[in-house]
Picture 1 (tube, rainbow, N blue to C red):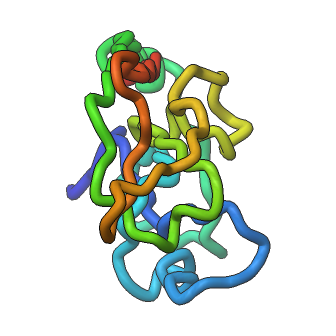
Picture 2: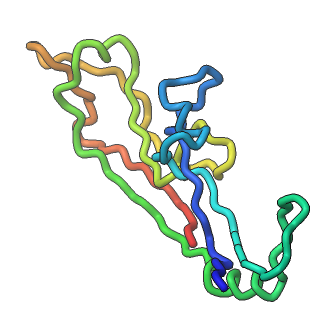
Length: 156
């Protein structure tokens, strides 16, 4: 008889904007179309039984032996570090010249300063006011010092 799992099923939704207001991609969170941003995963097992009709569908717990087997092979966490050095930021448009500019790096949610679910990291550059090149564009005056950013993360 057909069975599935236990296996991980990934759940995707709309891109995270960290806003209370709805956006144009909210329908992706409703399952209308396939989402584009990872949200979570579920450990699922589906089995078929002959001559049994359930009175109503109800979820059942997965046996602990199966959970332990999945944990042994799939829940090992590996540590990764992303290190970046910014060499220059040139040709910035005039529209960003009014306020300081900083850059943020991330791997998934790791490094995102607005996400409270991940540990903090030094994933952003110091805010710097753009300087004009005397013509049309602006640049960040990093000169001899190059900002660095680091993101530590763990993945299975």
